[in-house]
Length: 429
Ligand code: GDP
Ligand code: IMO
Ligand code: MG
Image (cartoon, rainbow, N blue to C red; front, side, top):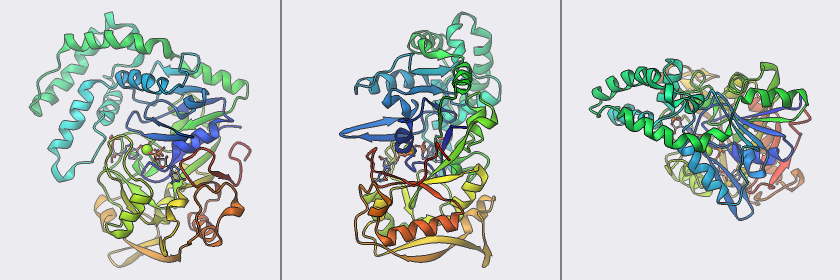
């Protein structure tokens, strides 16, 4: 099976976009299978910086790109992102971009609700991107969502809309918001439909044909396993499954089609939004990691929380999502640290613990056990060969492999596309 599934193995922003872009040179199709425009994937190609939230990262190279049924789809954002990225000289047409008919739509009422809930939650807020992701997935599961295919049948949308608005207007009243203007929403949908419909396809047929012709399919995950609605730090998670198993369900392919699972792992840890973070460094080390790594959210501009590498969490993420090999990113950010710390275990109420507990209060109470690690003074920035890495950096990588029980397949040493060390080829493994 020549396919590769890329997923984040921490709390997102591990550098998935860069690695998908790098791999997509040899892929025939790139598919997004979950999440929505809460993602922010940055690709740096020479002087151009592409920030993608909804479009698959393969689009920048012109590779056939598919937005699968598992994605929640904001049509207005789609129109604007297509225009923005096209404006940077990228050719985007229905020949190289397809959107599943089955994607649930994110409407303005979803971001309204996301924001209202966050504002009403005080200290308990999740710190979402406020882009309506959670409410849109709720409506999908609640069987009241409008979907992309409905944009072609707006004359018949009345009964569906009534069901959706009955639910939302009750919630809106509770939050002190005015009811949705039904007529205005229909006008908005009529206005946006022509920007989306040319791209809409039964994308499962494209994937079926690609599979039959033994084309290489690259599945592009968004977020990271620790934000997965089942396996993450619930309730401080996103509302979709992020793990590799979702690649099949969220694209319309069989579970045997997702191929080699490549976990993207940052050489330290970051998190944006609320929730537990055992190795967080709210101090000069955290500041230094954030500054050197430019750790500001692509989507919201929020400062990302930073801390040491947590091998317990990554080992767990790798296990629950079947990761076969990892791409270790942002190694260069650690250049020049005298000492690094790696979390190798926890204690909970004084007792040793070799995994992250499920209960939120226990998650907040675990205390990391650290192993100190001597840093390196040489630069790894821009290294493209294993032999160019300082001995101490290689030791750090080897220790991470040991602790996470997972081999390194790629190492990334700068934001630039080609500053990437290939250790073993995910497409050939
Ligand atoms: P994603 O959401 O997983 O695609 O990651 P983001 O794009 O949100 O965040 C990763 C950031 O790190 C982006 O600004 C990338 O350009 C940058 N980046 C990716 N790989 C490397 C690397 O190896 N070194 C450095 N210094 N930056 C990197
Ligand atoms: P990429 O694909 C980092 C976080 C939000 C918040 C939580 C829920 O760029 O790695 P949501 O809007 O999804 O309901 O927010 O999830 N979050 C991300 N954090 N990277 C992302 O995507 C994220 N997408 C959502 O900050 O804590
Ligand atoms: Mg990101």
